[in-house]
Image 1 (cartoon, rainbow, N blue to C red):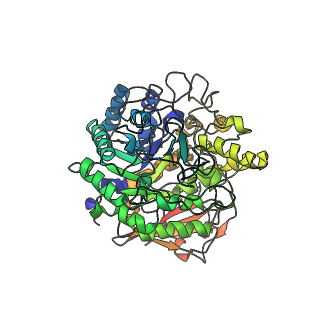
Image 2 (cartoon, rainbow, N blue to C red):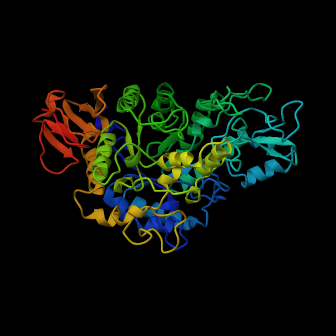
Image 3 (spheres, rainbow, N blue to C red):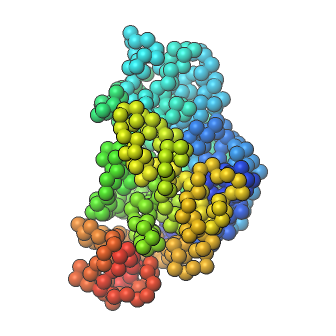
Length: 570
């Protein structure tokens, strides 16, 4: 595709703001819209094109805003609609778009729709959610009486008993997050109308949370099937019945027609889709099908644990190459990739995939960034990633805030696991690692708040912070600036073909990007020992250095630990 015909987002970089942890402006210890407005210069200096804003809607905060009680307003915790309008205008003045997080697989149990649905079995909105009686012959509330055996993502069954009616409602996540019934056309019409109002307000698109779960495999009689048993648990795996369900493409195409027709080219539509395959992603992201621009897939963040993320194991680089390579090849001619290392649901990249020791933290953070940004797709930078922020040293369960983490700890200890072993896994994999406040400076609360932060600041902020890096050309921040500028300036980075090299090598990650006779060779040493590349990649020796992450010239035939080079081939 000629560069002038490519969609704008092929050369864009997205920056995710998790508002609760970005910047507090009123001293209550919780980040807010006023804080984001204060830090716009940081985003502009970085060079990003899009800000993805995690949920700021009214919410009881059972899952930090992913349990929405009002789709039409802003939670006072974060500010006001007027401040959101100010943020949209301020970003647009700077040439930056705003994408809102949208959670429509489920609502909060405090949402008026659910309160009305729960009020009576005869409620007009009863069928807006998944209500079902207990299994035949079993008393409501008795273990095993749930309508299906599905296991919740946040531990326990996916069904919660409503004692007033004797029926259960479905929640794939926390019990405070009941699932909407997308089989009901009234639900879909209400969601589409809400989305149109946000676009009318100036929002530039949506990142749609677990959007591939909205279609459930419901039988003609309204029943939902049991899932295969999960080892060691009294529950079953329900995912075959709700991941990319039978009507998912129909629903997304209907959404596209009802919400986006006529204003499509300027928007960005991203679907978060756990469990999606390359083949399914080709369908979702094929422009001719009019569904979404790109998907968030989770294959590469499932390679360093066994079955459950709470059973982590070392990552084999060849496995990561195989995964990334499969997605690059699978979406080469149709569709588009999202590129990310971490987000609000994942631990910090430099701790997980790199080396956060004092010796290699800066080098591995910039190496990983180079590797990711030079792939074909749209890169996502999660707040603090551009500073090399690392996992936090949580000491005990009271340090954690995440509903998933705390639920896992309670369940694991109740099943007899050693609390110290459980905590060790949580320190590596908990979502709270991504949620410690952004480290702006070396002051006691890292410049995040004048009050007490809602979750503790990582004590390493005294050294690792934006103020210390802003004027340092060798910093992680400066390297991200250069990577983003390279994507903007060089069409090969945005649109070039991808070819993996040395797929079986466990320390060298190398590939080429080619477009219209121009070729970039990217070589990354993803380990702590130097690697001779003269024999393995002779074309790298003597090639023009476009961008590197380590200072000095170095030996052209030797790649230093965690060194990354972007080279232009003759």
